[in-house]
Amino acid sequence: MLCQRCGFDNRQEAKFCERCGECLEAAEVREEDLPNTIYSEEEEKTVALGSSQPQQKPSSDQEETVAFGQENQYVNGYSYMGDEVDWGRPEGTEDFGGYREKHCQQCGALLDEDCQYCPVCGKPTFQEKKPVKNERGKLPVKAILIVLLVLFLAIDAILAGYYLYSKRASSQDDEVSETTADASSDGQTPKSGEEKSEPLPTPTDKPEIVHTYDYLIDDCSWEEAYQKCKNLGGYLVRIESAEEFETICREIKAKGMQDYMFFIGARRDPGGKSYHWIDSDNVIGGDPINDVNSPLSSYWMVNEPSFQDDAVEEICLEMNYYSAEKRWVINDVPNELTKVLPEFKGRIGYICEYELVR
Image 1 (cartoon, rainbow, N blue to C red):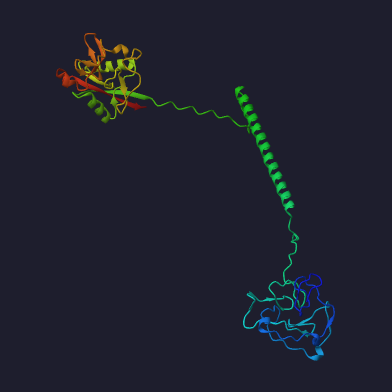
Image 2 (cartoon, one colour):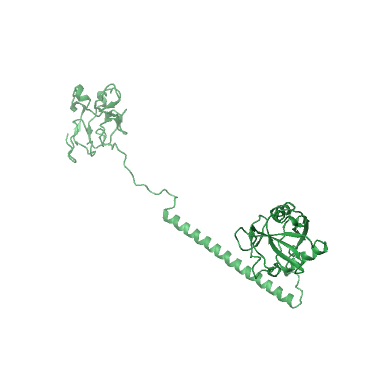
């Protein structure tokens, strides 16, 4: 049956258009006017409407004339206005045409898969989407943004107030400190309740380092003297001023050891032309001792340093009393002095220096 509204070709039994839901006829239909059609097996497979249970034919006293468009009443979901209509249904399976059964939510009639309106009652088979409205009591987005803005401004105002308060309190403290300082300078005693300025603690004096010396007699080499002083907790003496040199000379004279030669903690690298003091690791450093600007430049023996004696290279320093000049002098000698000059055996020594903290 063609729909007069959309032109869709509905089945003959349909009362409403499956596409647009339009009522197909306005004429009255009685039960005896309904076609008693027997569908073949092939036709039954194409029928989309039906019931899930056998239908019982209403009694004759329930027969009524039905006009399309009037209020619909349904009995067990299978009859329409008291007239039984058999829309057919596949047997032996819930699947129909390759898809699951589709029933009308209003009357329970079996529907085609693409049916949009029930041909029995005209109810839409799809759920219409309704515009979502804000639930009552929920704030819209604009209101939320306004609330957040107000909170931000309130927090900003609180922080600004705290900053001004802190700055004002700090300025007041500075004024009180200045007033106290002025009163103290005028010889006035601050009143009770006012802050008193406490005197700054006096810095402690730096620890005093005292240098002591030990004069040892030993026919050893310069390198052995360096190591022995290190083992004793000191170092081979480093004389860094004329005053220190004179102090050591006086102590040697006081001990009656003017006839000995003493190794001191200075040397040069082989091939080098300048002597330097060494550190605890026997590494040379500092200004050259044989430089004219050195504080010990005037204490060198005449024509020294010579850097070598004939074929023997002299790389170490010692100090001794030079009777020809009647003074204590500095001279360069070989590392193993007694091997080169055996006549000096028994006259070799070295000076160890220690630092004591008081």
